[in-house]
Amino acid sequence: MLLDGLSYSLPAGKLVPVNITLRSLRLIGPYNLDNEQGIPVWGGASYVWVVYSSNLQSVQAGRVEYWEDYYRYHWMYAVYGCRVSNTIYDGYVTPSTDEDILKNPPTAQDNIIEKTYKCKIEVEIEVNERSGAANYFCYETEEVEYQVRFVASRVLS
Image: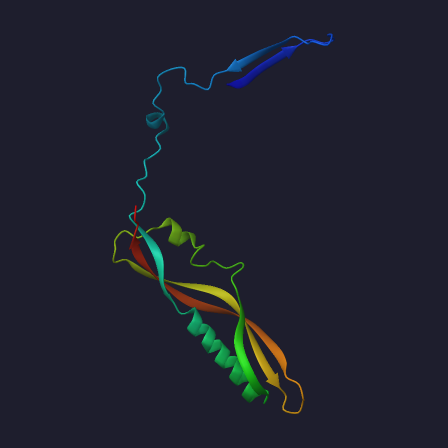
């Protein structure tokens, strides 16, 4: 029941008479809402995209090698370690947030697609200037591109 109207009069004593009008939530006539609204029945997808492989780790390894060589040969530092300290996805489309992948499911079991994505990586390099006594860390942040391969997978119901 929905409240349709309410009326009362003031001033009154401790008890105030109120007239309340309520409206039913039931349909008044024999309506067929499915036909009238014309909403198509969706049977669901038979297949979904699943990440099969990504070359992000090899891209990161290549950038780590680049920065290690850069500090070693360009700056002549003694490099004691180099690694990816952070991968930043904020503000980037990722395989799990890609609307194109979510809205366009595969149509057959043998469908395969490859897409290119971007993210930022932060590379941490532990160096020593060869003249100093202490090691310190340098950080390089850069945007990289990586490829992801998706394969179709049957939806289990």
